[in-house]
Amino acid sequence: MNLLSDALAWLIDPANWTGPSGIPTRAGQHLAITALTILLAGLIAWPAGVLIGHSRRGSGIIGALTGAARAIPTLGLLTLFGLALGIGLEAPLLALIVLAIPSLLAGAYAGIQAIDPAIAAAARAIGMSPAQVILTVEIPLALPVIIGGLRSATLQVVATATLAAYIADIGLGRYLFTGLKSRDYSEMLGGALAVVVLTLILDVALAGCQRLATRRIVDPAPRARLSTTRTTGKNRNHPCPTAPSPVASSSRD
View 1 (cartoon, rainbow, N blue to C red):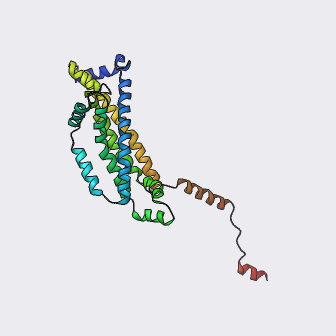
View 2: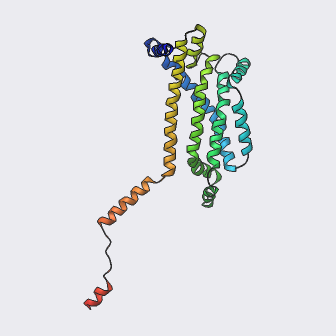
View 3: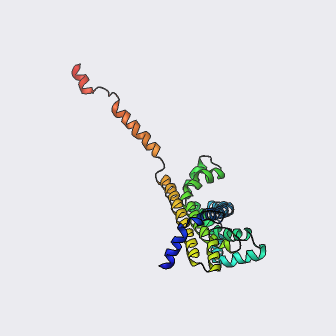
């Protein structure tokens, strides 16, 4: 309990919120390396996952690649890249990209592959090219699953990016290694809590995006229903004239 109170006191200390080593600066660095990792990994994983899911070939490759990549120890990979590339951002960035690719690849593949083939066949039947089918039909329908993969990859990267400070002076992980070196455990725990809070914020934001994408697919035409409601209302206010009853006409004759 003492250590937790010391960590909270470290977190709310104004001295830790200013300067180049302040929490906002470190959090910004943490977000920057996370965003760069996801962007570079996405450029590799998303096109590959979409194309494999669209062609429905090579699913075994997806399973093998994702399984092998997830089995690699991140700290060992980071150390290996650090020895090969030296101190700097390149080594942790490459290690994080390898970590992010499996979730992004699996999300894109699973989202596209789960779409009913009849939907793509109907799109082709009305004259759409393969690129149009992928971009305007399959990707929008697969978006919730793709965002789910993005969410999983982002959480893994933002948590593991803490290790980037092991060979590069960047991110919130620096508090952990600095605290470990100086045996300042309140700083270590405070830095860990900052990473947890940042991870939770990103998780909530991406979960909201995923729910929004799912809602748009489940309920795709709110405007159409609104238009129908308005038309129905107009018809009620201005009923169409009805033809005279044949019985009434014959009685007048």
